[in-house]
Length: 428
Ligand SMILES: [Zn+2]
Image 1: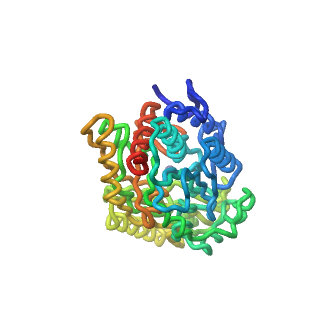
Image 2: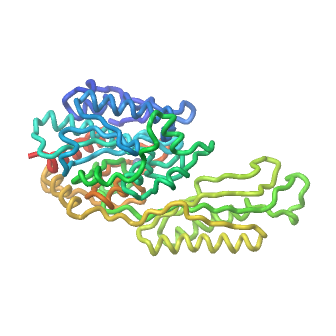
Image 3: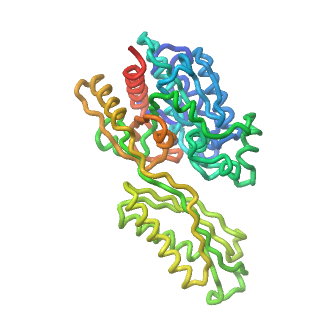
């Protein structure tokens, strides 16, 4: 049976339903319409907008329906606690509810919904909790609105300064503090939260896979090994605005041409290095059909399995851009806007997850361990907290698109795997 992004045929019981699988379907159905764009079918759940606020209200409702202690931390991340939040050595699971522009239903929400469903499954099993358990929804993971990913976890982990956070602006010039305030949150408290992170003994994030590795191995669930180093670079190509109908080709200083050459160079460099490089966002001035642009601003996203390869790709792209710019009389500025080094998930926790999952279900089955090119809150938090990730199979590998997909059976397998892991970590 498949689980379309657009609806669930048989949603099962309500939020208080005891089984993880039926409560998963019920929650999934409730969340599906929020922030879904009618035209594209994709999600536009940008941080601190109405759709995000609605997702947050849904989170709070789920927490309260289960008798969990609900709180918002100083950076706007949401928490739902079973047990004493101050006791320490907590086991935390969760993910994010925001989306990229016209994103899929699964990236983020699958982890949050599965977390609540896994708790329902553990209650159905009647286990005794020996450690506090929390479910988290981390704010602004995708960075779609302010251009920086994982803002909520970065702030908590001290990887984004308060000053830098105050400088973040969306496309309409609204700052992050203004956006938080408009959504009903106090922006004056944002900043590092080491005491909170020190009370976490393990963080496990379940996420839809953003590639086809599990489809190729034939497994519904895998464990993450590492997140590739990745970053975002802004390329500003400046030329001269002029009339598209009267300016001879020979007289033009058209930055769009240099940008186009750079896009092709990015593809070549990535192919050579076995890495990834993408220009997925562009801003043009004056942005008129009949005007030669004065400015083309393109954002490069690049990722590779290791730092050397990533350096080689980005250096190669910049070199090519500068050569083309010089020939065409175009001024070029390149700014690195964000960077996340390679994240190796803690081996001890990763191995423990492997052992827990191997001891369940198909006895003796080894769960595949995979690297990923996608960034996650788990990657940010891994600098402060022992962290692990579970991936759920995505048969097409498509992500950040309305076509993003996971089969219902695989989602349920993910819930069971997460419940097994949480039971192994947090129960006697
Ligand atoms: Zn995600």
